[in-house]
Image 1 (cartoon, rainbow, N blue to C red):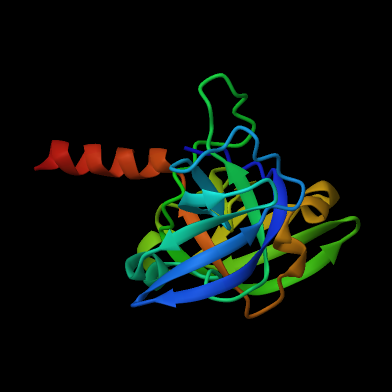
Image 2 (image 1 turned 180 degrees about the vertical axis):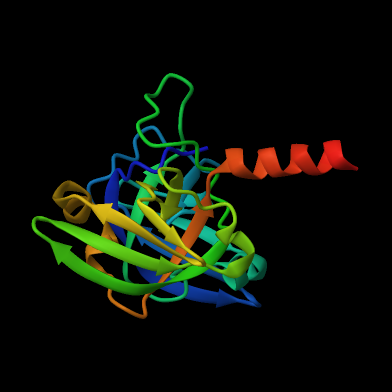
Length: 197
Protein backbone atom coordinates (compact mmCIF):
# COMPACT_ATOMS: atom_id res chain seq x y z
CA UNK A 1 0.00 0.00 0.00
CA UNK A 2 1.00 3.61 -0.66
CA UNK A 3 -0.28 7.09 0.18
CA UNK A 4 0.23 8.96 -3.10
CA UNK A 5 2.67 11.34 -1.39
CA UNK A 6 5.69 11.34 -3.70
CA UNK A 7 9.01 10.91 -1.93
CA UNK A 8 11.35 11.57 -4.86
CA UNK A 9 11.46 12.11 -8.58
CA UNK A 10 13.72 9.44 -10.02
CA UNK A 11 14.28 8.28 -13.56
CA UNK A 12 14.02 5.13 -15.61
CA UNK A 13 17.55 4.94 -16.95
CA UNK A 14 17.47 1.62 -18.76
CA UNK A 15 14.82 -0.67 -20.23
CA UNK A 16 15.51 -4.20 -21.35
CA UNK A 17 12.99 -6.37 -23.16
CA UNK A 18 12.69 -9.86 -21.66
CA UNK A 19 10.33 -11.81 -23.89
CA UNK A 20 7.13 -9.78 -23.66
CA UNK A 21 8.13 -8.47 -20.25
CA UNK A 22 10.46 -5.59 -19.35
CA UNK A 23 13.36 -5.20 -16.93
CA UNK A 24 13.72 -1.62 -15.68
CA UNK A 25 16.66 0.11 -14.03
CA UNK A 26 15.45 3.09 -12.01
CA UNK A 27 17.70 5.80 -10.58
CA UNK A 28 16.36 6.80 -7.16
CA UNK A 29 17.92 10.30 -7.07
CA UNK A 30 17.29 11.57 -3.50
CA UNK A 31 15.17 8.64 -2.30
CA UNK A 32 16.78 6.92 0.69
CA UNK A 33 16.86 3.20 -0.11
CA UNK A 34 18.63 2.12 3.09
CA UNK A 35 15.43 0.53 4.47
CA UNK A 36 14.49 -1.21 1.19
CA UNK A 37 15.49 -4.74 0.29
CA UNK A 38 14.90 -7.13 -2.58
CA UNK A 39 11.24 -8.15 -2.62
CA UNK A 40 9.94 -4.82 -1.31
CA UNK A 41 7.48 -2.70 -3.27
CA UNK A 42 8.08 0.75 -4.75
CA UNK A 43 5.46 2.74 -6.67
CA UNK A 44 6.83 4.03 -9.96
CA UNK A 45 4.46 6.58 -11.57
CA UNK A 46 1.69 4.95 -9.56
CA UNK A 47 2.57 1.37 -10.54
CA UNK A 48 3.48 -1.02 -7.71
CA UNK A 49 6.71 -2.75 -8.71
CA UNK A 50 8.77 -5.34 -6.84
CA UNK A 51 12.44 -4.55 -6.26
CA UNK A 52 14.52 -7.44 -7.64
CA UNK A 53 17.97 -5.87 -7.27
CA UNK A 54 19.22 -2.63 -5.72
CA UNK A 55 22.05 -0.48 -4.46
CA UNK A 56 22.17 2.96 -2.83
CA UNK A 57 21.37 4.87 -6.02
CA UNK A 58 19.18 2.61 -8.14
CA UNK A 59 17.00 -0.49 -8.25
CA UNK A 60 15.78 -2.94 -10.81
CA UNK A 61 12.23 -4.20 -11.32
CA UNK A 62 10.70 -6.83 -13.58
CA UNK A 63 7.48 -5.62 -15.26
CA UNK A 64 5.11 -8.17 -16.75
CA UNK A 65 3.51 -7.90 -20.17
CA UNK A 66 0.13 -7.58 -18.42
CA UNK A 67 1.29 -4.57 -16.39
CA UNK A 68 2.78 -2.95 -19.49
CA UNK A 69 -0.52 -3.40 -21.34
CA UNK A 70 -2.59 -1.48 -18.76
CA UNK A 71 -0.18 1.28 -17.72
CA UNK A 72 1.69 4.18 -19.28
CA UNK A 73 5.22 5.47 -18.99
CA UNK A 74 7.29 2.41 -18.12
CA UNK A 75 8.56 1.57 -21.60
CA UNK A 76 11.02 4.42 -22.06
CA UNK A 77 13.73 6.24 -20.11
CA UNK A 78 12.29 9.37 -18.46
CA UNK A 79 11.61 10.94 -15.02
CA UNK A 80 9.19 9.08 -12.72
CA UNK A 81 7.46 9.66 -9.40
CA UNK A 82 8.69 7.33 -6.64
CA UNK A 83 7.16 6.26 -3.33
CA UNK A 84 8.23 3.45 -1.03
CA UNK A 85 5.55 1.17 0.41
CA UNK A 86 3.60 2.44 3.40
CA UNK A 87 4.48 1.18 6.88
CA UNK A 88 1.72 0.85 9.47
CA UNK A 89 3.48 3.46 11.61
CA UNK A 90 3.56 6.08 8.80
CA UNK A 91 1.31 9.10 8.51
CA UNK A 92 -1.37 8.77 5.84
CA UNK A 93 -0.92 12.16 4.20
CA UNK A 94 -2.67 11.32 0.95
CA UNK A 95 -5.13 8.45 0.62
CA UNK A 96 -4.88 4.66 0.46
CA UNK A 97 -3.31 3.73 -2.87
CA UNK A 98 -2.69 0.14 -4.00
CA UNK A 99 -0.44 0.84 -6.97
CA UNK A 100 -2.80 -1.14 -9.22
CA UNK A 101 -3.60 1.17 -12.12
CA UNK A 102 -7.28 1.24 -13.15
CA UNK A 103 -6.76 2.91 -16.50
CA UNK A 104 -4.77 5.37 -18.57
CA UNK A 105 -6.14 8.89 -18.89
CA UNK A 106 -5.34 11.62 -21.39
CA UNK A 107 -4.52 15.22 -20.46
CA UNK A 108 -7.04 17.53 -22.13
CA UNK A 109 -5.55 20.80 -20.91
CA UNK A 110 -3.00 22.08 -18.42
CA UNK A 111 -3.10 25.80 -17.70
CA UNK A 112 -1.91 28.28 -15.11
CA UNK A 113 -4.36 29.80 -12.63
CA UNK A 114 -2.26 32.36 -10.79
CA UNK A 115 0.41 30.39 -8.93
CA UNK A 116 -1.57 27.16 -9.22
CA UNK A 117 -2.36 25.10 -12.30
CA UNK A 118 -5.58 23.45 -13.50
CA UNK A 119 -5.18 19.96 -14.92
CA UNK A 120 -8.04 18.50 -16.97
CA UNK A 121 -7.94 14.77 -17.71
CA UNK A 122 -10.21 12.51 -19.71
CA UNK A 123 -10.57 9.15 -17.95
CA UNK A 124 -11.49 5.86 -19.61
CA UNK A 125 -15.29 5.57 -19.62
CA UNK A 126 -15.19 2.34 -17.57
CA UNK A 127 -13.70 4.08 -14.51
CA UNK A 128 -15.33 7.52 -14.82
CA UNK A 129 -18.20 6.46 -12.57
CA UNK A 130 -15.76 6.14 -9.65
CA UNK A 131 -14.51 9.75 -9.92
CA UNK A 132 -16.40 12.20 -7.71
CA UNK A 133 -16.09 15.88 -6.82
CA UNK A 134 -13.91 16.29 -3.70
CA UNK A 135 -12.98 12.62 -3.92
CA UNK A 136 -9.43 11.31 -4.16
CA UNK A 137 -7.68 10.09 -7.29
CA UNK A 138 -4.12 9.01 -7.99
CA UNK A 139 -2.48 10.48 -11.12
CA UNK A 140 0.93 9.00 -11.99
CA UNK A 141 1.25 8.02 -8.34
CA UNK A 142 0.26 11.43 -6.92
CA UNK A 143 -2.68 11.63 -4.50
CA UNK A 144 -4.94 14.48 -5.64
CA UNK A 145 -8.40 15.90 -4.96
CA UNK A 146 -10.96 16.08 -7.77
CA UNK A 147 -12.40 19.60 -8.10
CA UNK A 148 -14.86 19.13 -10.96
CA UNK A 149 -16.35 16.30 -13.03
CA UNK A 150 -18.10 16.48 -16.40
CA UNK A 151 -18.81 13.17 -18.10
CA UNK A 152 -15.50 11.36 -18.55
CA UNK A 153 -13.48 14.52 -17.87
CA UNK A 154 -12.32 15.68 -14.44
CA UNK A 155 -10.31 18.64 -13.16
CA UNK A 156 -7.64 19.01 -10.51
CA UNK A 157 -5.89 22.09 -9.10
CA UNK A 158 -2.16 21.69 -8.52
CA UNK A 159 -0.31 23.83 -6.00
CA UNK A 160 3.31 24.93 -6.62
CA UNK A 161 4.68 22.40 -4.09
CA UNK A 162 3.13 19.48 -6.00
CA UNK A 163 4.50 20.75 -9.30
CA UNK A 164 7.99 21.27 -7.88
CA UNK A 165 8.18 17.81 -6.31
CA UNK A 166 6.57 15.55 -8.94
CA UNK A 167 6.73 14.89 -12.67
CA UNK A 168 3.29 16.44 -13.20
CA UNK A 169 4.95 19.68 -14.26
CA UNK A 170 6.10 17.86 -17.43
CA UNK A 171 2.55 17.15 -18.62
CA UNK A 172 0.85 18.84 -21.55
CA UNK A 173 -2.27 18.33 -23.65
CA UNK A 174 -2.15 14.84 -25.13
CA UNK A 175 0.04 13.34 -22.38
CA UNK A 176 -1.08 9.99 -20.99
CA UNK A 177 -1.20 9.34 -17.23
CA UNK A 178 -1.79 6.35 -14.96
CA UNK A 179 -5.03 6.63 -12.97
CA UNK A 180 -6.08 4.78 -9.84
CA UNK A 181 -9.52 5.57 -8.45
CA UNK A 182 -10.37 5.68 -4.76
CA UNK A 183 -10.76 2.10 -3.46
CA UNK A 184 -13.75 3.03 -1.30
CA UNK A 185 -15.84 3.73 -4.42
CA UNK A 186 -15.12 0.26 -5.76
CA UNK A 187 -16.06 -1.42 -2.47
CA UNK A 188 -19.32 0.52 -2.23
CA UNK A 189 -20.24 -0.51 -5.77
CA UNK A 190 -19.48 -4.17 -5.03
CA UNK A 191 -21.48 -4.15 -1.80
CA UNK A 192 -24.43 -2.52 -3.58
CA UNK A 193 -24.32 -5.11 -6.37
CA UNK A 194 -24.18 -7.91 -3.79
CA UNK A 195 -27.19 -6.58 -1.89
CA UNK A 196 -29.22 -6.29 -5.10
CA UNK A 197 -28.45 -9.83 -6.28
